Image: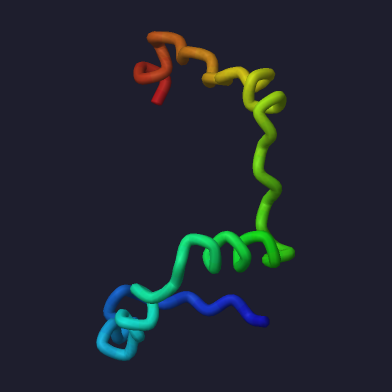
Length: 67
């Protein structure tokens, strides 16, 4: 399927089935998520425990002077 870019103005929210969306249960959403092959895998508790925050190194003070 081709990727289509749309602006907010292109999307007609009046066409959305809001009542049908309100009827969707959390279990149905979970089933849809589990069956999506393009979904990135969720992290396990062990993986989250091993995760660490990585920040970019601070820039030197003279960067503004160079630019």
